[in-house]
Length: 116
Image 1: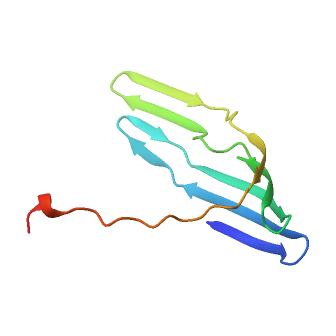
Image 2: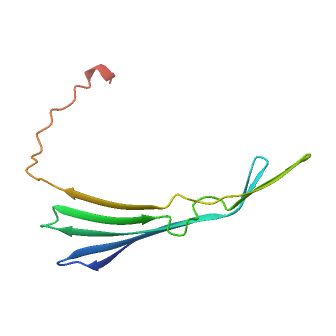
């Protein structure tokens, strides 16, 4: 799921983003993988006539982006592994649109060498 919620359209222009997914338990070769999921959220603030953007983002809030367990039960081998997800991420970003870009006219592409 990916959602964008407008907290404020006028000044200040602030949006909340919320995303997530869920993967059911699965078999991969001789491995039995447990379920895993992800929930991430962010805030986006547009200001200065929408030329400036400030973003706060928090990924993998529940540290659940990799399978919690992996089991191998094949022949004489039995292994049970538990994993600890350490891939949380907190990010801050700022961007500025300078403007002044003017689109130049494009010349038509010579397609005579393509055949018909």
